[in-house]
Image 1 (spheres, rainbow, N blue to C red):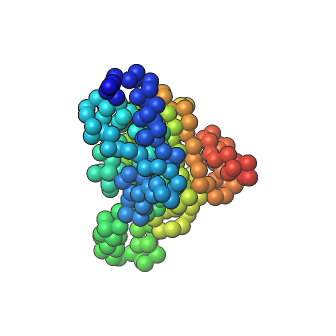
Image 2 (image 1 turned 180 degrees about the vertical axis):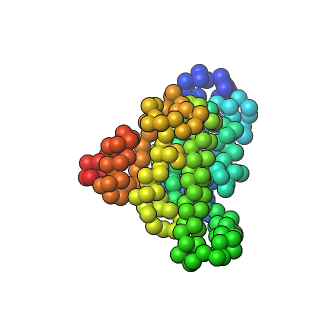
Image 3 (image 1 turned 90 degrees about the vertical axis):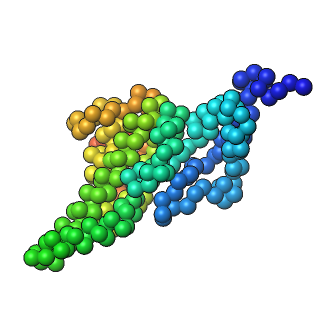
Length: 243
């Protein structure tokens, strides 16, 4: 009887694809406010990752399909470094990535400590002035978190083909100034994936393999005009059709 590894590679790849690729976004390392992918709810079969433990040859071949043919949600690498290790170690294998940008991405413990320090340091100011400083500090912290996630993609995912940024819940951490936060999106992350950036903001450059960059979850016409019009990035077809 022939062994599985004696089959032509094309046939083995077809079997790997049937067993490992799913029609759902994979959330392997959720943040504290997210949940991992529930494959039963999504109505798809869970990837048969046990294949990765059969032997080295099958593991190497299956890993390429697992990471390359599925869509993965990248974690907030700034505060969830452990969750980002697979994205660094296997970065060259990823082809399709999503990032859900959310005001809750700022770490609650560090945010509380930073706010307390601001209030103590600026005790001589009025409450309104201290609130403004706190707001700006938390917004800067969120921008840094978003930027680092973009850098993780640029620096480690050299063969990525598609990237989708989901901004349904992208407000400043105080829950206000939605449009201003969206306006900062270009400086925070999108400039890294612009083939012809409006201005040079850092040395990181868009991977040549990246052909599809989308921004979804925009709520107002002003947001859509900015991202789809002025910046020239794509979005969900239904969003643009109903704008």
